[in-house]
Amino acid sequence: MYKIIKNICCIGAGYVGGPTMSVIAKNCPHIQVNVVDSNKDRIKQWNNTDLTKLPIFEPGLDKIVGERRGKNLHFSTNIEHEISKADMIFISVNTPTKTKGIGAGKAIDLKWVENCTRQIAKHATGYTIVVEKSTIPVRTAETIKKILTSKDLSLNSKKYNKKVFSVLSNPEFLAEGTAVNDLTNPDRILIGGDNEEAIKSLVEIYSNWIKKEKIITTDLWSSELSKLISNAFLAQRISSINSISALCEATGADIDNVAKAVGRDKRIGQEFLKVGPGFGGSCFKKDILNLVYICDYYGISEVAKYWQQVIEINIWQRNRIVEIIVKKMFGNISEKKLAILGFAFKANTNDTRESPAIEICKRLIEEGANLSIYDPKVPAQRIIEDLDLEKFSNREISKSEITIEINLIDAIKDSDAIIILTEWEDFKNLDWEDISNKMRSPSYLFDTRSVVEEKEVEQNGINLWKIGSSN
Ligand code: NAD
Ligand code: UGA
Image 1 (cartoon, rainbow, N blue to C red):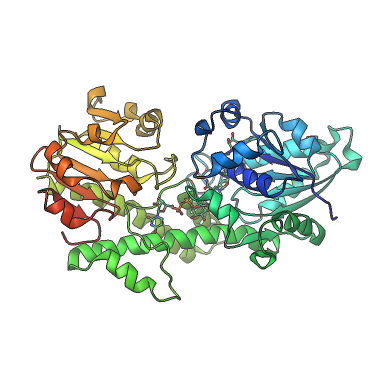
Image 2 (image 1 turned 60 degrees about the vertical axis):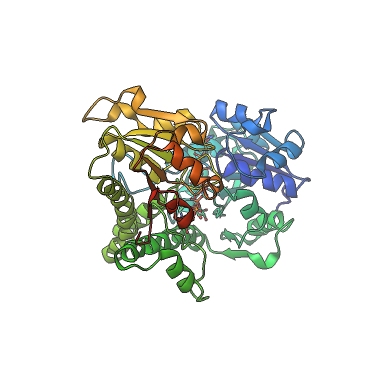
């Protein structure tokens, strides 16, 4: 059934729901966009008049929220009410890896998707198009459809007879830190469904700012699976380049030069070949684990093993970095002060989910190092929670061993080594002469993102280890 969309509800005001709906609201002033979440604090933050205090840091997002909020963009906890008014509902809730039961550690936990689908079944009225925005296992739309058409749930509402649903898949490809740009100028919009008219309703929304040639329409299962495969391919490239970084270190080749030369082949392409301490972020690991789980479920174990290896290389990369740090510092980092520059999983975000910094710092703490951590955007409380200091089994961590600094110079003062873990712009042009004078000698710099100018560091007497290079 075709429907002109005047009112959208998005369930989930997170890293995807917030920015995605803000960009829709900006480009579709004729549509009322209501973002709802069960987390009251998060909604309160989205409604903060101080736009620097939004729950998510994304360049350009504050401006859009400032322009549209209160006009056609609204954040609230009135989930039932907004569902009942909506012509189209986006499911944009979290889909983490299961932590217990069948498939624990691999399969996606669909608890949140199922819960909000039940809310939709109960409170929606009339004809409603339900859009899967969350990343979910292939064939999840089948589950959603079953719940939406379940008599028991729908009968709870007096309006049962009037309820009709179409389910579409519309995965999100934005990356954190560039979300606004990715949403404004996407490579493609992918819409999967089996109802042409419903697909048309969603295509019309995106057509307000995206060229039709960029909008791909396909069947439900291909759309759902394409999202998992896109993330798997991206992560695979990172594991590929990271695996070669070790070979460069062993042979005297330089990983940046190799990446440049290889990427010049347009069949390979230059993007996503930047060496680092391993991929982080909330999605790559969980989506590949899910892919592995699905392959095993369908009995395709060779394929499962192939993708599992992308994760194994990722773990290996961050472990070997810790081993190199300890080895280079005479096999002992106990009671040495290590300045950690960067804790976010990548630059331009305050997100630390699955950040390689977490595991690297934990292992350094285990070795007895005193850490002084600085990140320009990640709040101190987040870092403390991520390090989960109470869980260290081998010893008690005293507060003086871990400090979180709000300025970089305090972090590096009297340190024995600096470890760059996130590629923040600020770290690329530091005053190494000044820094060298403030460190303890012999001083070390471990650049796990390959961002510093080697000469500048070395001519100031700092011992440099740069990932993927032989120095
Ligand atoms: P998130 O954890 O930041 O946000 C999810 C929000 O949903 C939370 O605020 C939570 O309170 C809310 N929620 C859960 N169940 C609810 C319910 N029943 N009713 C109301 N609110 C509910 O997650 P995210 O990073 O925005 O990711 C959401 C989905 O998008 C995931 O499937 C993820 O894989 C996918 N995705 C994420 C990114 C990214 O960059 N983070 C990019 C593309 C796709
Ligand atoms: C990634 C994808 O890029 C998005 O398309 C996708 O929508 C999203 O996951 C998702 O589904 O959640 P994101 O995790 O936000 O986006 O960020 P990326 O830029 O992909 O970086 C992921 C990790 O890989 C970061 O830790 C980053 O530092 C690392 N990375 C990335 C490298 O080490 N090298 C590179 O060349 C690129």
